[in-house]
Image (cartoon, rainbow over all chains, first blue to last red; front, side, top):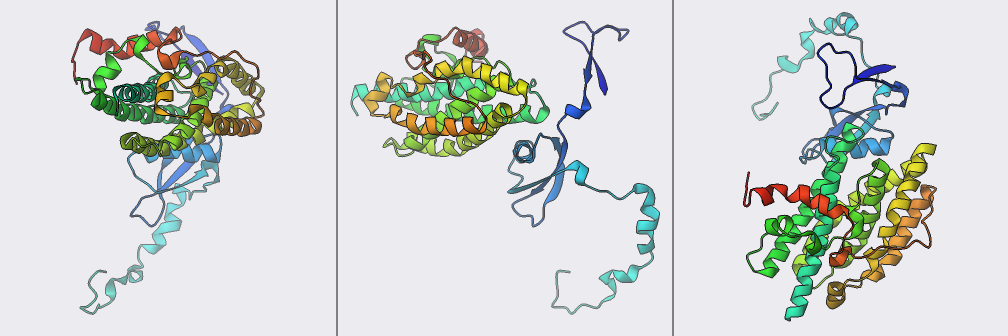
Length: 119
Length: 249
């Protein structure tokens, strides 16, 4: 439960007491959604940010209003944030470091024919 | 075009422009006060769409008047009795349910009206209608979903939308009664009522709502007789231009 101390016009006191205590049930808040936008030139959807919405339809419309106002996109995906599973930063060592000394996995050791320009 | 017809076209363009400007101004009152950030942006986005439509229509009317009027003078320097917007758009925001219902009732009307005007022989008017229709389609879709969400939502949201319906339904009759300028131009405004009612009833059904019957319908806005609210809107809207004439920034 979040507790917010709310002050009205001009009654913000120096000692920060007073005001009306407004409690807010977090369970009635709208869930958080992650937004992915594909731009006109882009092939893939890129994470654009997150927002609150009551349902998927509202999430898409909110995303349209919040993230595509300046013609950023032609396609929107939304997914409720709770369905995103993330890797644990504390496990970064065991997850990523083993790749560090395996430079042979990069294609930098090949001799390319001259005709191949853009690699 | 004869003189009478040209005056009617000016009046009709102003009527369309005033509808868009006043609803845009009303919706803009939510700016910074929306129930959540995302909806605050959504409603002010609609506001900007409407003000954009109003600008195109005022520019068109100013061009027809050809008396030195500009889009600004038409928006900022006409008095309450000269405004021809329908009564529905000047009604107060009330709570979110009332704002959503006002938007839905108006967007559904504007949707069929612009669809109809796309084929008008006045090319500029037809072009403005065609361009605005995409925006209005979105407003209609967005507000329909809110009506369903609120009507078929919680006990409180349902009771709020019922209250809004009681407040606003009485201003919907006027939309389909032709003003003299609409008659002159042969705009068959009453013919739109069938499609509009069908759309409204479909959404209401999904929202577990029912359109009120036998309600006294208020009229007058389209010919300049407004409810008490318009004066207050214009006072705020026109303040800067009245106090500092010609002010720009």
